[in-house]
Amino acid sequence: SLAVEEQFYFVWPLLLKFLGTGRAMWFAAGVIAIEPLIRVANYALVPAMRSHIGIMGHTRADSLMIGALAALLYAKPKFEQLINRLFAWHLPLAGGCFLLFVNPFLEEKGRGGYMLPAGFLLQSCIIALIMLWAIQNPDRWFGRMLNSRVAVHLGLISYSLYLWQQIFLTPLNR
Image 1 (tube, one colour):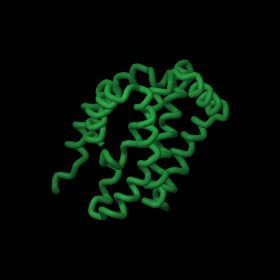
Image 2 (cartoon, rainbow, N blue to C red):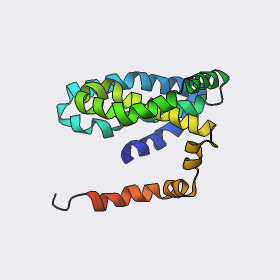
Image 3 (cartoon, rainbow, N blue to C red):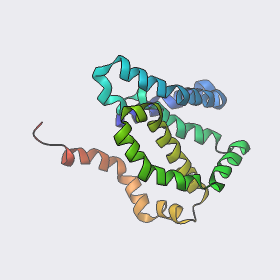
């Protein structure tokens, strides 16, 4: 997953510079739309790489593009109206419950049949919606929790934790 993020941080600023924000929004939307098909095609056409689908840049770009597109659309009035409607329907809460209780069941039972065409995309959309809600509601319990000293500190050291955990969680007898 780290390589996917590195590829994004290298490519996305260049795309923004050369495409401009308007075309970059269309590019991100296109990647989001086509990515489930790319995952399914990768699964069908390259069986040896099936176990890597969740960690390859060309099969997970939609997860990053959803956040990039949300950031580009955030200040737009129509987007704000849309997310406020979703918030009024309590979709961030329903989405969080889905991620905690329903998604693990679907992931286990449906495996690739769920995750490849829908699961990865659905997870990313729900997480983006929850984050947008937290950004717009910093004084609510979830916003306060994300802005707490502990959460901020964990955010600051998260990259180091990510790297160090490999040493402690990887079996020595490879």
